[in-house]
Amino acid sequence: MKYLKNVATIRLDQEACTGCGRCVEVCPRGAFVMREGKAAITDRDLCIECGACRKNCAFGALAVNSGVGCAQALFMAAITGGEAVCGCSDTGNASSGCC
Image (cartoon, rainbow, N blue to C red; front, top):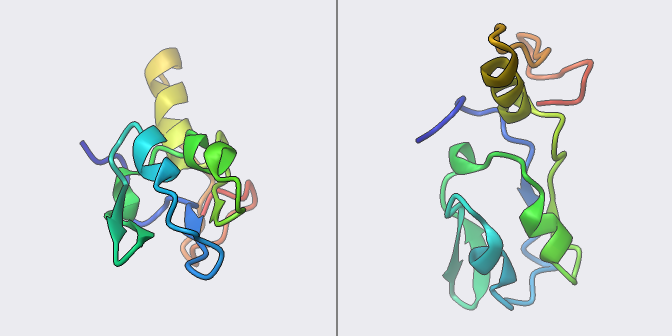
């Protein structure tokens, strides 16, 4: 299941990646694979911005604004019954830092 297209804040620094594979192990959505000895993002839209990859990367190769992105907005909407609003503007920038 994909949530919203082109809004995930996940970033992978290929140069900092050592190829340990920890992100592949901990990602609950399968957003990572190993390619040529390093991690690669399979599909950014799979990311739910939980932060597990960032928290488990001992080399600082991953960054994600967990809990502030559009995926978080969807979760909150499901919990509260409201509308999913992440604050994204048409330019891809957001006052809330989600995009």
